[in-house]
Amino acid sequence: LMRAAGVPIERAAQAWQLFHLRHASITRIDVFSTGDRKVVSIGAAAQIADTAITWKNVTGADMSAWKGGGPERHKFGGRMLLLVRQAAGSMETVAGQIKSVTDHVKSLSGYMMSGKAAVACTSDAQGMASVIANKFKTVPQLLPDSIAEEPEAAFLQFFTVPEGSRDTVIIVAEDVPLLYMLLRSLGMSPEESKVARSLYSIGNASVTLVNIKNDGTTKVIGVGDSYYLPISDMPACS
Image: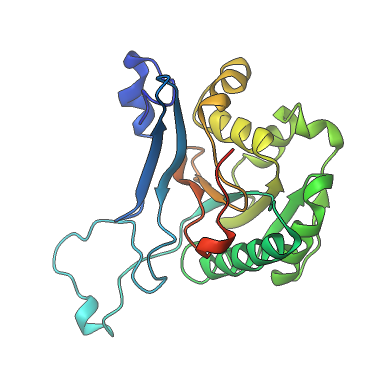
């Protein structure tokens, strides 16, 4: 995966330590006849029911059978960042995508992340962000138009440790700034991030999860997850 994403051999093994993928998740890399590669998703797990999804290995005796049968799990500490690519397609498709991604994001607050969330968005994604923000009883912060092409300021603003023990930030935008922020969180320089984002192709209405722990370390939980979308609303990646 790291090599397909353009990470040099000497850094690939170290870069993999920045991921914390959920069990039974799916990573997809498309390889074209030209030899070009595109990372479509990493650790996608929305195909798994909320009641069954886990991300930590069980050590010692598994006590879940004596505690109601559900998996033992705890919400992530630190800041959880949800990078949501804006919806696209026909009006009917966009409406379906927005509903599906909003329901999915809200469900994550039940078992994985903080129940309260701040929402930020670009101007083109404001409609979708407003629907998501409404689920969390807040309003979206509108980012400057310059963020679409120069997202470094947004990365520096949001990819920091929380003031408390746990919080959630949802950023709704186009793929270019989202992929830039993802790659910056993986330790790439601004220049490297601008080059490497062309190796990714996340779908519209997909969700990328990045966890900034309270000690400042970063773990990527999933990239480009869109398996919560019905087949009719799932667009081709571009």
